Picture 1 (cartoon, rainbow, N blue to C red):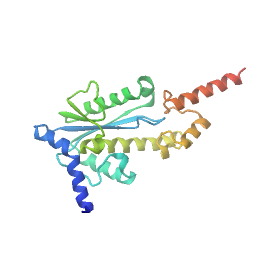
Picture 2 (spheres, rainbow, N blue to C red):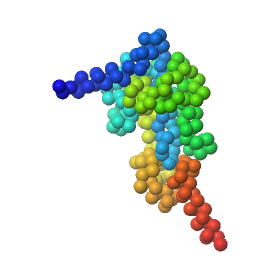
Picture 3 (cartoon, one colour):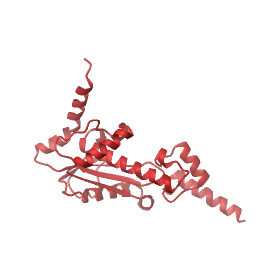
Picture 4 (cartoon, rainbow, N blue to C red):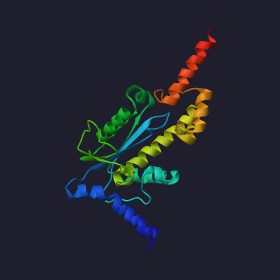
Length: 225
């Protein structure tokens, strides 16, 4: 039997609300989904979002942000912000990532996002592994951005916000192509990095950027001999 697109959408909607529905049945009402965007790039911040949705709220096309086309992501982000009971978006810059490492920077952003929610959440659904020092009870969900409506909504907000920031950085630091690759280590980005050297939003603790810095230092030392 071939499912129609409407039937598939309904099945997807039912599946995405399964985790939250179990929490609602236990008496919990304020469930926050938490997700991040930008752990892997060589440049730019990591962005974390936390979202509390009304029960059974639905947005056509909601899914893991990586599976959603950019134009639809933007529309979904607007709808999520308009409908959410609470949401928070936190930006952790490259300097902090270099100071404490990307994992701790992500955890820092997650805790800040949860603490900033008004009204507060009763429980957090965390995409991936458990969050150390979580400010409230949590449930970690591996692959949560494709399994939980709340986490999927958070992934959309984090991704769209970070993409906008990277497009703005293209204006501030032209030549790197940030608007295209969003700071990820594409061939074009690596070529620009070697040609121009790192800019202030590059993560100097990441190996390709660190190698570029060391190469520049070696060249500078040779040229002064």
